[in-house]
Image (tube, rainbow, N blue to C red):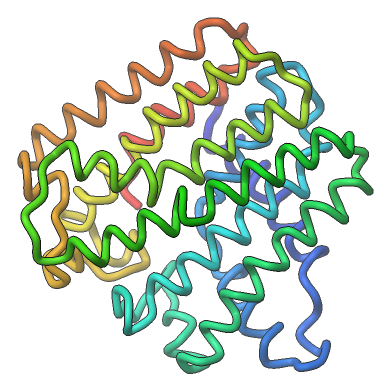
Length: 296
């Protein structure tokens, strides 16, 4: 398969749906809807929602049924980026090649834009999920999974640990745990909810979870490497930011070459977990391979 074509086509499906779901800028009060759309419309790889659609197909379902869930996950991811960039967090000026939300709309409105995207995500998942034909019981299960992955037992918990551990020496095991929460939780749930909403069985769910855990950590390792050696014009965000904020990363603990080796082995492990599937899982395998060769 041509992965570039696949990513472009699936990304457009997500972008078009997001444009449909998000309130228009003129809706009262216009500024909050403009700020929400600003960050969602800034682009991005749409990896998480694409993984959701791909996991639906891996278990033999129709990806269209999961479009609202996939979009909800992307809205949650975008909210997290807005908040991550705030001066009280990472204090980042660029995101996806554009000024960060708070640089355009101010800190207070950026906080509210993030809050708006997080809460609106669950409206999209529940309201549009039903309209797209999702089984209400399976949809409820998916909502529970996403809420857990986005909250203190997932992404928010990881972000809290990231802040607490700035400037501290931590072990590789602790770093793995941090990233399992901060980055991995939302990637894993992107795959799990695809299987859930498509009626996948326990074996399929377990395989997708194993795959997601492996590529989620690999994704973060490559992010760590790109922060050291990446090109700001390709990344669309500042580089060497982790060092400035005194964050422990894989390169700072084990070096760049060992970090690459770990990421490669993780992707191999993730792809091996997909062996229970037939050719329907090819997009997932290609996405895993893409993670370790990306330059943005």
